[in-house]
Length: 413
Image (tube, rainbow, N blue to C red; front, side, top):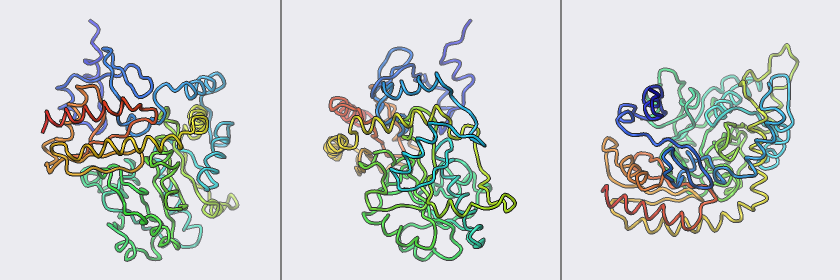
């Protein structure tokens, strides 16, 4: 007898960031289709995608322009090696990204973690080529999250996620604020890593206004590495969070929304100064020794180009300003809801914190489960409920998200 999809999931799969004992005791939601801000499971039940499929889907599912670009690219080629070869969409996308960010060099990888891993390795090797091999230390901030590869874990500062893997990591200098950063900067620091404006996995924690600008000023003698994996491509109301404070980093990591949330693709962007340090005769071995099988793959780059075209054709950033206001007004209503202790917003990112509850009480998980039962999908960060929908969300769908949240809080708390 053919096992059901749910049975097969329980039998064979291991899900990320999921306690599988709990998962195996539940009926899984199995997504079969989606359109716009709505997902549909195999039973036909519809859900609003209130966290953009982990903060990545920008314009909605099955956007015709991006879907067509992927189909058109498939008619030509999906992937060929980027080692010793180049390809058309990768070149065109690099030019677009360079002009958007003001950073002239683009190195492709697969996801946010690898984009940050690339940045760390570039920074370390840059200083070696600059005859400053003593610069081996990195500064990162308290409660930082930069991904799950080992370098990214090293600069991460969330105990729950990172402590287990500490034996594999390198030592990192940890700053909680500007005063800490001033004390830590020295001729041994290769780079300073920051999530600009807002720390995502820390619970959507906002940095003080002007902090990013001050970090840039203090990093005049070292490399500033901006992790725009979550904040890039409009999430904060501008194309990149760094633009809010007029900051151009030395290295920038982008991923998630790069392809509109369609395909895995990431990029690390660098200044010409960083790039030039790697130029030399073959025998000098100044080559950047890093690469991935699917680096610069045509399919992902075609999706990313279409994503950027949607920004232009639909005037997304201009339209988003109204959406940000609509989110703000609804977030304000949450302050009166039972159990809510704080509400935070950065652009089209909303966070509703309940508490105080111990992590073991799983209050965020329980609230999100109640939301799911009522047709809204999101994922908590501890006691923080994240509302980060696609830009195509309608006013009626926003109302449904927040009405459902109010119902779920009333039931759970």
